[in-house]
Image 1: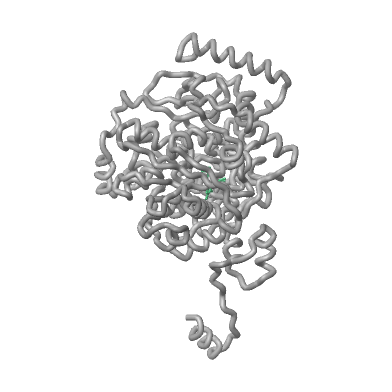
Image 2: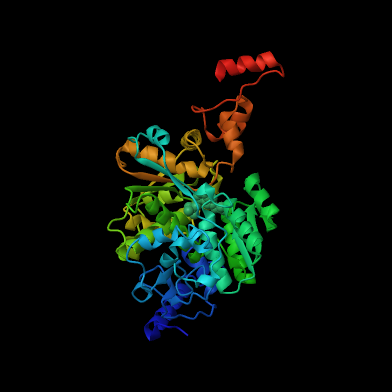
Length: 512
Ligand code: F0G
């Protein structure tokens, strides 16, 4: 039964008929983002509700609503992405940030300690007793003048948000905690994801700690870092390695989860993104609730950028902030779909009336040219970002910009982040490399307040780090030279000595 009456029922029927006319042939529909899920989901029985919390299609022309009891990854009516939406008038959300500050004192309460659930009132889709937390989100916003000066900022203006400090080593735990909570609410027993590493480690650790679900991860062959694979294996997840890359694994996991009724935890799951909103709440919290001028984030599947846009739109709507920061999303040049579509081809959200045909054409071009995503920043080696539409919306909300950065820029930025402490994986350094470009262009002012999101831990992709710092030219050439990296300007080279006391002492005297 549809909860929004005859008009919506008619609209669904009309849309179905229209799409069937457009795409009469059996099998997957031509535009993957919009239509693939639709072709699979037309038979899904969906209950819509006018409740205080519901799932809602992001397309304003559709706006169909569905119960939070459903596990959906696309709107069954039109195939677009879904939001978790709230009737804030009936939920009575906080009128000031003080509510969250008071929770700091309750260190014995796991929901107050969690950096996600401390903000439960801003993602109120689950009752307290359903919440799943393993202590995620206890991360750090640190001012970094070293990295700030590298990118051309004045002192005291650049901040790094270290999400690598999460239990599994990446920002994914923010979203996984929320997805697990939803999965628990609806009684799911198995959960799956496609992953280049971080999502799989996160899913696996939540399965291992909570014992609530069996985790199944899909990885492209040779496309996962050993550190991350070892986490998934250690935590006991079922690991399926398929011949293909992340985009292939993503397409397959969607099919398989639909077929077998397995709960999907990739960021097409709207509950995942509810958890990722909290990264922005913590940034604000650390800045004394002041809104920075810029948030700079790497773009892969575009889950974070989408979640950040939603977080700020909601906070503004609730009157908790009076302006939103600008958003910069940074692609690796070897996986630059968003940059190509947004920056070069002018694709925009346009209040939800976007003509997405440039995206369909671009994906066709990629297929025709057999072009695959290719970057050392393995976590963002993605050519078909599943959250493209939501990200376009976020870019509109936050007056955003998109840039692409080279492998050289990524690795130099990563070395600078490491030299400044804590460190990050290559994908995360794309944010710093992108900020550097934007400062050089004058888009970001040297004295604006900028927060770069470091999405994952330094120990991911160590081969790239070691190759950057190596004295072994053949290793450098093999790992980095082959990708167009020609120099390691910030290398910290190991000093080789014989196993002799005098040589060791001499080396320390010389370099120490
Ligand atoms: N940074 C890191 C460290 C990631 O692991 C990912 C995604 C991204 C950025 C891109 O995220 O969706 O916000 O654009 N990693 C996925 C994975 C692909 O499998 O772990 P987004």
